[in-house]
Length: 81
Image 1 (tube, helix red, strand yellow):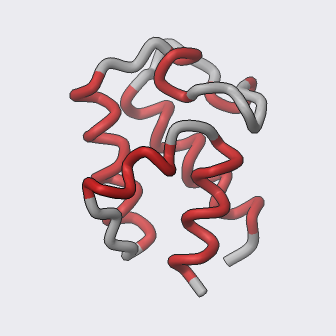
Image 2 (cartoon, helix red, strand yellow):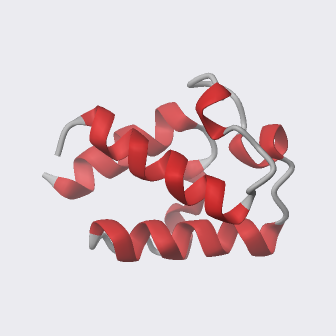
């Protein structure tokens, strides 16, 4: 799966948990939760949905690697290959 495909999935799932936001406006280094004003429950819902959609196990110990788009993409690309 290409980075652009992963990014589109990420944007779509973020839009589901924070419908009033524009996830595509995030820069790679911005903190996702802070920039989109997502609380911890919605952040967890996003991680669970991402895991299910991509078929990738994201253990709780790895949640810190999903804080911004850059790290999230790196993490997902490693898990998908």
